[in-house]
Length: 379
Image (tube, rainbow, N blue to C red; front, top):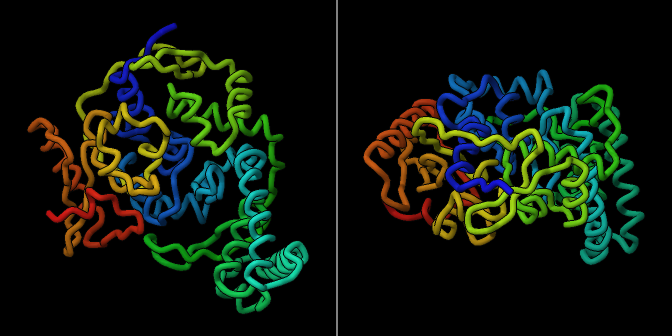
């Protein structure tokens, strides 16, 4: 069994994730495909994730892909997290990870509407309000905001349960976050029927096929990874992961420290490290959130770079390791904060990335509800 060292894993990360300068990709679609999916919990994250991977990226490129061409789609999926998915990956997610989330969300809503006194029959409440919301959206092909839906369906009972009902319908692929009514750093979408947004809606894959398709993409982007990584990332069971690995003919490899990882059978060849590189990634970027077992790229720095709930703040990268974070001052200038010493050349590349990001943001400041301890430290 071949051993994939941590150095090779970091080289793969640089090349597969489009982070080394020579590995950067052409556009928003290519950046998303490189990562399998992009995190979209915070509205600015997809834009900053694509910026890190596409030279000359303009915000309008991602707007085009999401709202005009609709080659990328926001979908609630793994771990009840909102992602940007390539359109062709939607049926896989709908039939597996999204379906799992939808079932859990439905059960919770049915229970909670009774506990909160909105109804004595949670199933009846959900069925009636789902029908009303879907009927309204059928009459409005351009979509309606959550506030507009709440005003039109008073029985929803306020913003909390309106949001939860829409979340459940989104996980089921009945509705989708359509046109954003705000700027790129704030998400206020018009909720739209999936058939209005996509036109012809493909059928979800059966669960086993869906998980296998997701695992195949993940192994290309993030392999070698462990079974624990996949179980966590998918929000799935060990049984589902093991079946997917078997269906794909995934290959066992050794990892530094004695663990076992998995690669696609066509992806066993060693990967050489690119030239030295640095990158600045946003809160919850798909790279930093791609694995459960993170010591090989975080070292001892997880407590500084993640909050107590496991959410990653901004990160600064040097040759495949997270070595700090970045923040903005009141004028919008980006500053790198290191959590370990790095060579002078590394600091110079990180400062170059900070200047590049400062210029791209052009004075716009990006807030977050997930600041890490390192981000909150005084300069």
